[in-house]
Image (cartoon, rainbow, N blue to C red; front, side, top):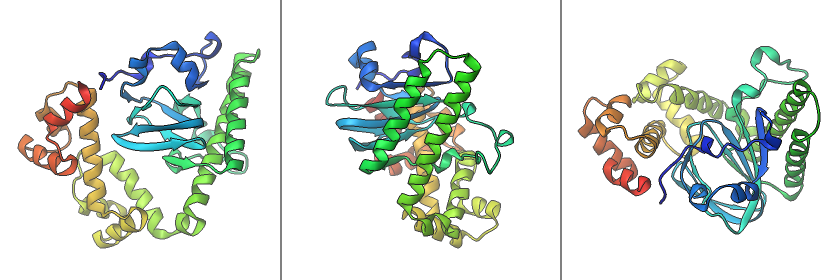
Length: 293
């Protein structure tokens, strides 16, 4: 596997102008960079939507294989590790943006533009024919508008609201996919709060008890919520998030393993090594060798 690079090095800008959102086809990217660059592992510092429009491909997100066909939509988030999987046999839209481009909570009004929680977006959706047509049309319009002759402030505002509309559509589709009763259930809502806490504290809080205390519930009810939402226990969710961050650091940094262990809250590197092998079925050294060389 090729050595990992930052996606920023590809640095595509529509029409040579500096915009806060970028929209292009994967085939455009393929013509501009080498196959080696495309097949590398990337560590994202921004949000990326990939909507497959034709063909099939198996992409990799956070070291998991994700089969994609026409109508598949991936949402890649800052910090995630991604590989396109193949340079041939498929094409699709790519939409790159940073969270700062979206209106902040103080800039939104609930009747005109509700606060959009990016955590409501799906990881992967298989769109129906009608939904795919609507998403494809929205992205194509954004690309056309990005190339239009307009005052920069007007163009930024237009793209900003078009992006918000697209993301709201995806959040609604995700809710419909999960089912209204599921998304409104107290257990799923508790799990969502738990996941946000895990993202903020996984390096320091390794025990379910810490999260239960912060959420004002019992460990048993938190585990029940996690099982309802994912089929995994709360303890497994925490361990998986710690292991994922370890994988990212092993692949995208040259940091010594003992420093990775320390940064993830392990007092002894040996304890970290045992934990990692249990979660990843490889030692930290073996995992690093597999993906960095």
